[in-house]
Amino acid sequence: MHWLQTLDTSLFRFINGSLSNPLFDAVMPWLSGNRLFAPLVLLAAAILLWRGRTPALICVLALATVVPLGDHFIINTIKHAVARPRPFAALSDVRLPATRDDAYPVARGEITAGPANHAPPAAAAGKPNSMPSAHAANWSAATVLLLLYRRRSLWVMLPLALLVCFSRVYLGAHYPSDVLAGAILGAGYAAAFVIVINAAWRAIGKKWFPLWWEKLPTLVAGGEPGRGQEPAAGCGACRVTSDERTRHASPVTPEQHWLRAGYVLIGLLTLARWLYLASGSIELSEDEAYQWMWSKHLAPSYYSKPPLIAYTQ
Image (cartoon, rainbow, N blue to C red; front, side, top):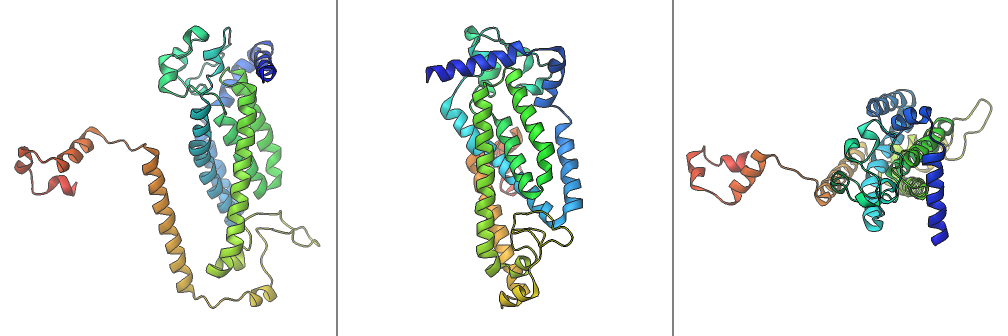
C-alpha cells in the first residue's frame, strides 16, 4: 500500500505544482466555489421544471434528496472515520493559489501549509478531513441523476464534474485518490437510489397510486421516442396504452388515492424531522434557549410575566 500512497502524493504534486499557471490560478478557485453557484442552480432547476414537467420534477426532487443526504450521511461519515488530513496540512511546499474564501473548507487567510501546522485553528473548527472529496461526490451524483433523466446532459455535466475534481487537487484541498473515491461513491449511491426508488414505484405505485402510475409507469426516463420509432423501454415520458390501462385497472377511488398520498407525505415529513433531530444541528438563539430553560425550571420571576408565557412561546 506504500507505493499507492507514494503514487498518490506524486500525482498530487504534479497537478498542484508542475501544472501551475496564471490561468489555472484564476479559474480553478472559481470552479471550486463561487457565489454565483446557488443562483445558477436555482435558475437551471426552474428551466428544467418549465421544459420537462413531470419527469423533470422527479429529477429535481431526486437531486434535492440524494446530493445533500449523501453529502451529510455518507461522505461526512466516511471523512470522520478515515480522518485523513488535507494535503496543505500534511505536506510541505503545497501551493495554495485560491484567492476566494469559499474555495477552501477553511478561511483562506488562516491556512498555513506544512506538517508543522497540521491542525490550524480554522481547520480544526471547519473541515480538516480529506478522504473522500464531497465536491467530487456531489458532482458525480448530480451527473448520474441528470444522465438518467436526459442523456444529452452528459456533454455538459461530465466536463464540469471533471474540472471541479481537478480543481480540488490543483488548489491543494484534496489528493487525487480523494476525488476518485468521492466520484465513485457519489455515482454509486445516486444510481442505487434511482434503482431502489424506481423498483419500489413499479411495485407499489400500480397498486396504491394507479392514477399516477397510469401516467408515469416508471421514474427512469429512457429518452423521448422519435417519429416512427417505438417508445424506448422504461421511458418516463411515455404513457401506458389503453389495453394496459384496462388490464391494470384498479378499484381505488380518487379519495383513497389522495388519502394514501397524504399518509406518505406525513410519513416523509416525520422521517425528515427525525433526521433533523438526529443530525444534532438544532441551534437555539439566546432568547429561545432562555425560554426553554425557563419552562423546565420555573424561577420566581416567571410569575411576574403573563400567565404561561414560557409554554405558549
